[in-house]
Length: 429
Ligand code: SAH
Ligand code: SF4
Image 1 (cartoon, rainbow, N blue to C red):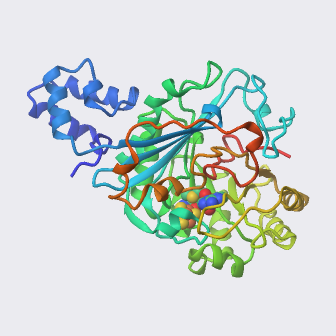
Image 2 (image 1 turned 90 degrees about the horizontal axis):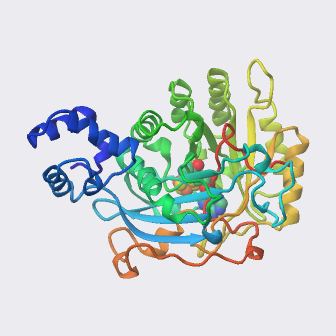
Image 3 (image 1 turned 45 degrees about the vertical axis):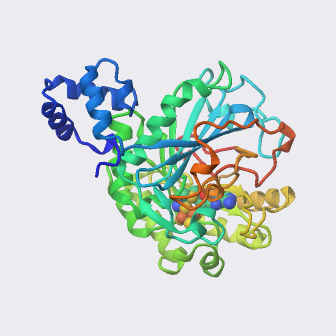
């Protein structure tokens, strides 16, 4: 079964067009719609003959993603989507919009205005940023104890086409969702930080990454793949010619603590993980970001911070000798029923400063999506298990008003999202 039109290669598209008795250039038009225009719906491909459009939409009626829910937050600067997949499962994608540098007061994670040294200062004037966070699996088999997706369990892998189609659908929705003229009008970044472990679904992940680069024209440095630390996947990433950004979800600096949070640490403990990252850095000369979800009383003590600094400080980019690691601290986004909570702002600050004292660059992630089903996996969790419960929550866009600005605080983010070191590593200190 074809899950998405984006799963068809050029040869298959040509065969499809030939079967319909159409000339070969129609296949090129189809590719232009899919990749150039990011339009997955055959009915909207207006320069194809009506008969071909009807044939394609009938033949692939069961394929593709359907928008089941849409929620807006942050005054329209964050949008969360629940897409239903063929077969009834559902995945989340999140769009985060950022204005051009200096065009509007942007808040840092502490709710204050960003100074000139802040993240916005790194963005060229006149260009905002639009990042989409996409899912690579329905659910996740890694079972991280703090993660709503992990606690929900694994349902299935997404195909490369289903991953790409999330980007296409969000791209085509973006123009009508822009909160104002200063918001970017096209996607600039893609992060694999939604549901699932991308490196447990490597063929589809890399297939999607190449398509996004070659077909959609995104620069490799605009694409970030986040992993919980699957060593064979990191080794493969080192060998892939496409220079995407890599983010590693570390979350603890000793094996006992990491074992409790990230069960896969028992297979690839921290030393092995860092060996693989070191080899990755040596092979690629690229920096790696380390995601660290800060949980009150669990992994936020200063001993962990100092240890994290000691672990990561020796990671250097060959040649330049600069730090290869960048730490992104994410105050935990509370998930009902899971029982972890974010530390106080003062504790976050102390943790950040202790990591910084080791020389390793460190940022605290700003809060996004306050009020729209918070953490990773929550939208699907509240929507019910895959295949049931979704239909009775209503269909189609269901925007909700954004929260008041003073409601922003640590641990109230929609998803822990990062753009990777090559793109925009978050608030600087
Ligand atoms: N499986 C991959 C990518 C998806 S998860 C990975 O784990 O890296 C993306 C990030 O969200 C990970 O760093 C994950 O640990 C983090 N995360 C999940 N739930 C969270 C929560 N409630 N609060 C903060 N970060 C969370
Ligand atoms: Fe899976 Fe990532 Fe969640 Fe762990 S944090 S359960 S790897 S999605």
